Image (tube, rainbow, N blue to C red; front, side, top):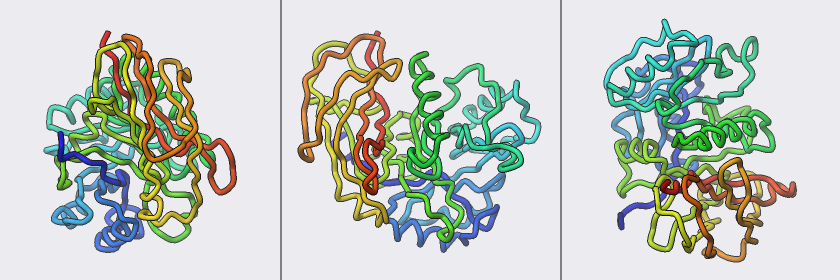
Length: 322
């Protein structure tokens, strides 16, 4: 759609309504200070903070809750009614997710490889998902940049393996934002492609449709010459891909770290690299043949604070018709 654009969002936030230090007004102000367009307020096991925040215009606030259980943490977004999570067991999580979907909600797995007990009870994902189509999004990045957080690399491999099996799961970042002090990790965001002006419904639809990019700052996107982009399904064959790297978003987000984009890499099934281009400008094109029954995700690599060959951004895939 002509009026769609990419909005910077944080999809995992906490306030004093659970274990965060932020009051709701303080969280909203912190989000504005980082030039975030939208947030998902996901306090642990309670909606009370969202009830205070839902009228916010900037940032736009998508309502949610972080199911905080002994077997994993799940971000439930915009569910029409409270679904009791307390009796969820490792082998019954599918039934719980179906209830979320029946009530209009989205399901997202938070920090799947976080250290669990005693560091963070239930922080490690130990549920036995049988139908991964019930999972809308997965935090492939949590808390910081991938090179500082080894579990993120495992999360990316899990996500890619699910794509290989035919599941369409949006990649997201979750800062797990509790406070501004004593949080030195580089902050990323999830960009969502939504109609303007941004609304909670637009945020929700973008996540459900796989129109996401995770990035430590640059707004990096890819699309076909006729405008098909992350989350879309296109025919196999020869296409021209257009890659865009907008580094102005780095200053907009007031990041304290230095990121220098160097290379564009395109990946497909098995995380196999099929294209590599040096970054040479804001807009670049490449002609490539896309094979049937595959997914293609574009990633931006570069330097982070002088450290070379770090992952800066991951685009949700284009899917190719079988």
